[in-house]
Length: 275
Image (cartoon, rainbow, N blue to C red; front, top):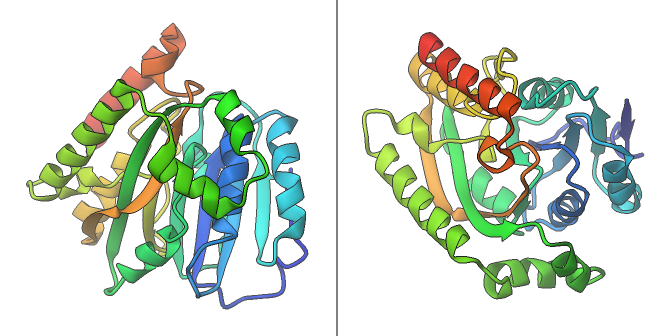
């Protein structure tokens, strides 16, 4: 299934394609789209939502903003056959026309200057730029209802300054930021780059390994391969913010399901065997 805005075929000189993978995340996906349509970036971009088998609610939530979009916006859907972000992202890449690709997860709401800051870092040919994940706790529908209808700049400001944070989220953000800075200075700097907030040139080698099914490691495999085999330079900039509205839909550490754990362990073993 696919749908595109009336502007999707009009421009060919696109600077950056923003690829957002979603799965049953209607609230955060709607906020992501609103933010992407209000970015400070002055170049020309397109937005591609690539859906890993959601129910119809995600598209219904996006459609009002989708219909008003003044830039190319496309929405593609693949059948729900388990957690398959790699083929979902690859479908987005295949449709993309931008000189650069910017990946976001469906629970990562970008700050209004996110695209601008990503593009500012692409000053040489082969770099992969990772932004920060600002943990904002589990998705709370009552909180979403409280911001429903507010201008997007006010909503993003609330996520930045006024969102109620639980202690676990604060700790995760601190630990993750510290580790990624350490990894960037280590012998394995590619570890600082994960796909929830990542931009790269739109080159043929930028494809995700579709052997990964389930949660985890498909993004590290891409970063490892680009760094090791294609001489990409990893950059981590924690001033490039996306606000993580966490859901337990696919995260094995939250779901605790036996099948999810098995798939995650398989992904880890496959990663070590391959890399």
